[in-house]
Length: 395
Ligand SMILES: Nc1ncnc2c1ncn2[C@@H]1O[C@H](COP(=O)(O)OP(=O)(O)OP(=O)(O)O)[C@@H](O)[C@H]1O
Ligand SMILES: O=C(O)[C@H](O)COP(=O)(O)O
Image 1 (cartoon, rainbow, N blue to C red):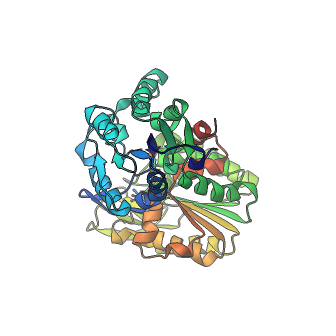
Image 2 (image 1 turned 90 degrees about the horizontal axis):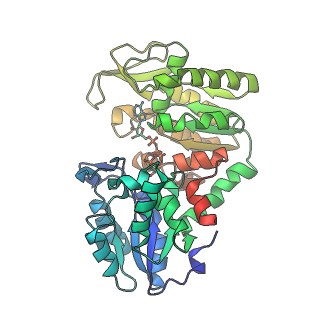
Image 3 (image 1 turned 45 degrees about the vertical axis):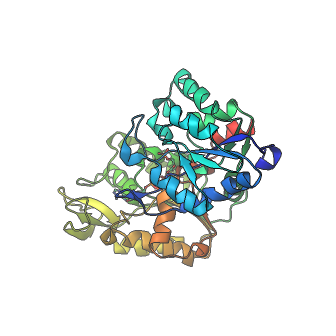
């Protein structure tokens, strides 16, 4: 992959695709890790006299303009971190975007509004995506891919634009790939993978591939209820992928045949509602009341998961064990984070919310071998899949 050193950027408009998908609460950024991780590449380009047009997504507004998904707060934070004004365009490829891009002087930075306000960004239709990519590419002379967290998406800004402009990989993508390579080439065993979070339908499939790679898979977070239901247990109102039950039964069978241990929680924190002040209690994982939903793994499971990580050679973790944003459901995530630290293994934590959880719960980032900005992206990389955003940069 070419790096930005291979591009002559001085005086030219460079479209940088970053991953600025940060958690927000009441319009305020609750963790700016992904913005900070994006700064070095933008700064390097400014220092070389580039006119930097940054583009990124926030959440999943599904092709509609939804003000709560505006990148405006991110533009302000990015400006603070860069120590310069960031011009914010109020659209993605419209008049405001063109004016912002064309008005840049050397070393200046603009940020476009949320890419996913435009249906073309995520369209599965090549022509629709291509038409949007044409408009996005027209804003710049060169393209730098740096949004590692989104490289697994075949989206216009990730996959189609680099096929239209001279391009290179930014420093973040290069650094992430360097570390993750270690986990695919010469992994120190036993190799444990911990999965949780809420993007269940997105991430259940990775288990299929990991069954041939990991020695042990620990499942928590929203992911776990499809497993418990597949075993015939009641999961109440918990997150559940009903159409995946047979698939999950297949994973459990294959794991047993191939000697891969799938570790499930033995207890769960079950609440009456998705709220911090809802009534909640610890129940056995096979006895979740029908009117409750599981929002964290229980204390015994926290101990069990930590014990299963002890002595591992490598641990990769994506997805919080519970709704850590609410203190009553943060214990499981805390226990697993501590378990990684105590394991003595080479430890990688991946994902926007997973990395945010580690910081928010007060852990020292340096206690982990690597904190990756990519959750789904890291998982797909570890599966050995071809990632559209990396492929486009290599071509
Ligand atoms: N039992 C649960 N029920 C509902 N939501 C849950 C549960 N456990 C965890 N979560 C939620 O999962 C979210 C994070 O999931 P997600 O899969 O997005 O992880 P991530 O680390 O951000 O990875 P990525 O970078 O791929 O998005 C958190 O906001 C957390 O509240
Ligand atoms: O949070 C992430 O993993 C990336 O920003 C990609 O977001 P997505 O899962 O909504 O495509």
